[in-house]
Amino acid sequence: MKITKDTFTQRQIMERSDFECYHYWDPVPPVVDFHEHEFYEVFFFLSGDVSYSIEGRTYQLRPGDILLTDNRDIHKPEVRPGKPYERYVIWIEPAFLTRVNTMGSDLTRCFTDASEKKYKRIRPESSVMSRLKGICEKMLRNRDEEEFGSGTLSYIYLVEFLVYLNRAYFATPEDIRKDVTENEKINEVVAYINDNLADDLTLDLLADTCFVSKSHLAHQFKLYIGLTLYQFIIKKRVTVARNMIREGAPVMEACMRCGFNDYSNFLKAFKREFGRSPKEFMLR
Image 1 (cartoon, rainbow, N blue to C red):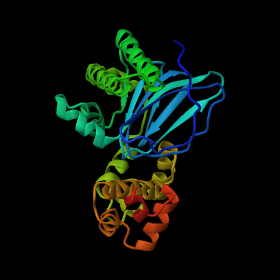
Image 2: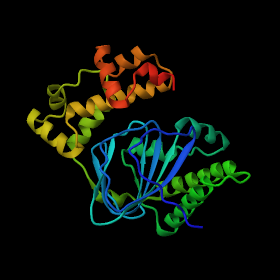
Image 3: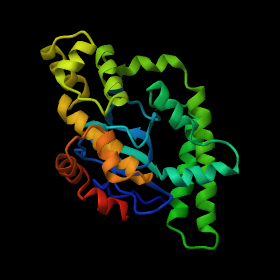
Image 4: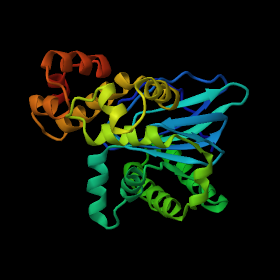
């Protein structure tokens, strides 16, 4: 049975409350800006000429590479022309995955460990890659069926995929880090920002903290991150505030704990990033 390829859109909001699986094939590279989302994402690269930036680290991708992002990661693919761009993309709602975890193994381990180690790529061996591709194809075929038990099979296939994904993650050798472009000082700055969002994160402070000049920091940050220091801080602050609100925190608490001392500025930044106000967001 032939699997239909999905039409890529810039949508970064899930339509379902559990998980979604897509198969994209683009002969002309799409332009995708820096973004973040509320869910876990599994990006399973199949073909193309692509590098992928996640929080200051740029991964040079080979067919079969898998990237894991969570609901704090700011990321962007750089897709160059010349080859068709093909990938599987799986979005998983964190609350749904937490419920699935009650059945036994912690299927979030690959995501949490990748965040702790700040390294987001899996490069499975060929047999495991083929197995994971096969499960993706089963998910996609089942997604479009309406036969008895299709919904149950969807969950079974997802759990099967996540089991083998975790196995592949923890079997990935350390030497694939050679395909990453990064800067140690910029990594320090990103880590400091992530750990101190409530502080007054000025260029002066960050330059002094990391023992570099302001001009050098500003230039290197834009070079390795792809955003200005100010753009990254604002994007990170509203992303974390969104996550806090989703978890039940009062809007003003999220505003203050993420470094916005002025609610009107927070409101403007939040609406610019997500297209709606924090209160509208709470009503979803």
